[in-house]
Image (tube, rainbow, N blue to C red; front, side, top):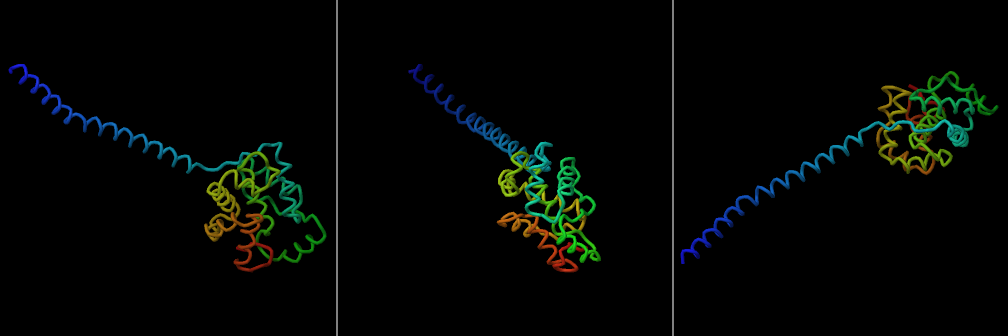
Length: 211
């Protein structure tokens, strides 16, 4: 009888101890799990906020220039190459205005020479070049492939970076909604944004973005 009482006492003590310690162990595990998830989430946020840099290799410059030439034939090859090379070195501002590459373009540029601002083609080419540059390789596949490769969120960052470098504080005039539509546009996002801006600036639809 004494042995039975002692056995029952041991069982009751063990059960009580288990009930006390189990929540502590569970809470410790849960806390560790939460901490791990939080750290992963924090690391993910940090990586998402990192700037998107130009990853274009020197040997891919000519391929990008060819892509841009097909979209912006009024800009000279040398001018487009200067845009691409400058961006490779972190300079997203526009070079001095290029010489037109055809008689038609020369006439158009002359008729607009009294208007202050940069041309639609200059702005469009700079934006497209920035997106392609951020994607790195396969430059000859063009800007739409580049958007798919880096994702729309990164592409938006690149566009904002390029516009800010070109126009400074006036970049705020291009809203995130416009940028989003440009990325969904079937053609060049740079051209879409530049044309939109030209249509809504001080001197609408004159082929230049006026400030």
